[in-house]
Image (cartoon, rainbow, N blue to C red; front, side, top):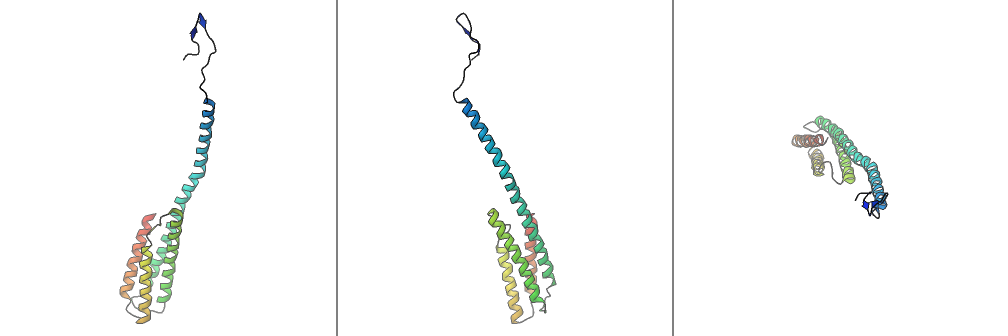
Length: 161
């Protein structure tokens, strides 16, 4: 209604119509707005942290994978004196990747890559060790399989970034 409405022979000046509780609603809106701003201030860095951590883990996994690829290319197709040390180095790099993968799973709830990649690679390395111990030669098929699996893993990790 109009503030200045005509009444019996004249205009009533200054009459206002207030809704009850309008002040309480205004306060509630300001409190909710302040809470929303606080959540955004606290929440946005958390979201950025998760994305930064994921990129960091993926980058470190790629570095470890590249080291493993270099190591696997040094393995010869037959047994040599440093095959055990090279396999141990490859295993340690894969283990570091697995730990990073599990850490990411703990933080975000999902791993960067499936754990089955690591399980298969550890199995191939165990077979490689067993072949070196039992007959000491003819590791060509295992070396080819190990190289292929590590290169596949590298491609998967490179696709994460």
